[in-house]
Image (cartoon, rainbow, N blue to C red; front, side, top):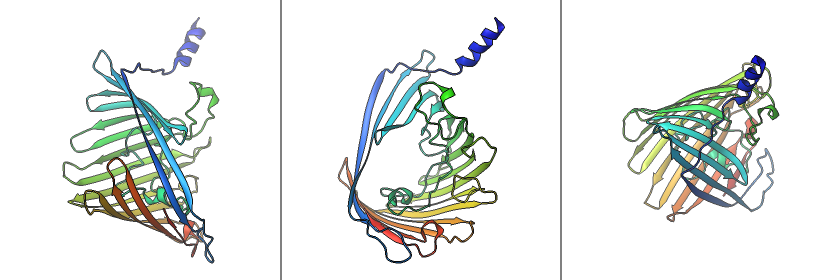
Length: 325
């Protein structure tokens, strides 16, 4: 009898569900038309003009429990794949949740560098740049987390039992291979100063294996808005890795970005961003990416033009290219 009771307790684990009082549906579609060239040290191959699409449909709903706690449920369908889902329990300024992509950018994948449209790590897909400002994030893994809002900013903490979890299995933990875990803490806020944005986070993440090899990421950023101009800078340093994800003892991956956005009018904005990637891998040089974007807001839709160049792609000297989209 004692054995049966023990088995039942272990199998029960944590099961939470909510009946939604209402359901909201929202969505977006991004259509791109662009052309570029494959980065190379010599003659570059033109990639030709391509039309591409990115789409998402978001579902959200909630209800209130008898004790006053608000329960929210979210799910996101991105490019025909369910990518983010969560259940959140909110009491006052405190949120406890289980899920993915809940923090809203103030954990370990936040950005303070202003952009008109895509940041350079998203807008340079045709260039294959190695630069990424939050390469070691656990924000897209399944986590158990807490968000605490205060008068000076928001503090977050999250724990991922398994990094790289598939997330789509129907309550079947045994079907997910054992991997390393991750822990992240973060802060974002302005300390009560109008126009100021500060970001700081620290992540400790095991590699996607059974060993105890860990990489750590420290992310700091600052932005300030004064009138029609917003400027910002951010630096992410990943230790014991040369590519941001795989473990390399003594390796370092450092991504630095600065940018500015000028709101020329209520409809037109101009943005410029520069990103530098430095690693201490043997034989590599700094990778530099620059991006200029002009956007026009039509009210409910935005049209943008973005020109991006890359020098020394992936740390290979003289491997240059550009893309327009």
